[in-house]
Length: 235
Image (cartoon, rainbow, N blue to C red; front, side, top):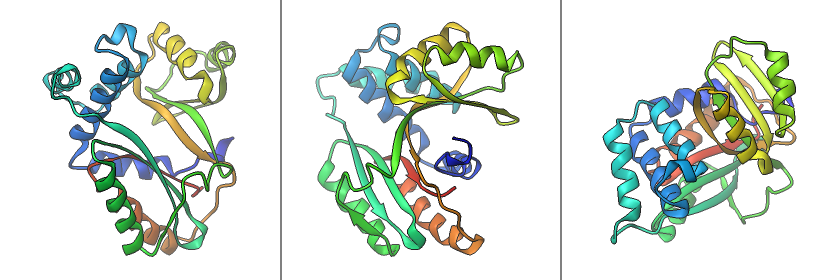
């Protein structure tokens, strides 16, 4: 897969780190996972990973516990997972994943951001054949035998393994998410972030000026309270 990984990882992580509303977004993911699969992390793999991601981003323990508690409360909001698609300038395709208790508000906001940044809002499903759904795990840098680890993870659905100064990147088919998650936990590998992500099947290259223009759209989308992740077909 290599360069087919759908966004410039360093750029996205830089934006992620700078988001002023990061903790509320992480809390929303924890709350949604707890409401869907229960408040016990031992019995809820999705919740375990949401908590691991929150901890990796230095979210305080009290905030994490409060998010789990809200999910089981009588007044807990019904948070829905939503997906929107769009097409920007220079052939850039965009998938936006949201979590919201008010889909009407969310879709209006996303449409407005697309319109104000010269992008077209597409009907859901338009980009199904342009992206592949993958299980993606961002781990701490691995110091052991990488070849041995790769051979072991292949049995659990691994498709690609990358290890560099930023850490270890594990990619597998989306159907292998639980199996890969379980083996990563069993091997006590430290997870920084994990989830199901969209990877472009045919990534494109842009000039520096074009990238800077598209970056403005991506930043506007990620600044929205309901947006959890943004994916593009930029190489």
